[in-house]
Image (tube, rainbow, N blue to C red):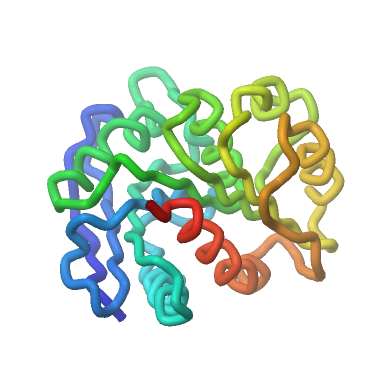
Amino acid sequence: MGDERLERRESAARGRLVDFYTAVPAGHGAGRGLPVCIILHGGSKTAADFPALGLGRFLTDAVRRGKPPFVLAGATGDRLWWRPDGGDDPQRMAHEEVPRWCRERGFDTSRIALLGWSMGGYGSLLLAAAYPGFARAVVALSPAVRPGDEIFTAAGQLRGTKVGLWCGRQDGLLDYVRELARTLPEPPAAGSFTEGRHNFGYWSRCLPAGMDFVSEALRR
């Protein structure tokens, strides 16, 4: 395990203190100069849960398999679907404040990817569509999408962004995620539809491939 931290930061976008998580792969010190994958959590988790979910371990494992190193970063957005709600704007926090906090740590925010599951998968796609060019790639694990929602209507904005889609065959969202794959302006660059349900047991089986995909997308 490398340098893994959970701090409290004042988020002006959210109007409150939030948990801010970072993980650097083992053997890469404080991570200076490494690109960033921003994690957007699902509805039942927060950034404080990331260490117990083993995200830092998945990152280090990818690098030990020979993939180019990067860092993970994420903050708590609560259950707002990564959209603004009055004066509380977790999307702006992810777009503006998390990169700024990463720059303060010396990370390279000129190269950014996004990764999320369920609500966070939705939020990752929504963020990438709202700010084309912000992210090189998006890993969406069982994104909680529905035909006609904001992801489908903004799908054209994802042209040029590499998208990886994963969803379990026993997940009630499977048909919607498959339809999204057909709706994207370019075919998904990674992903699979294998046995699994809508839970972290399935997502943890997808994370090695997701981390590899992020690493290659962030390569110089």
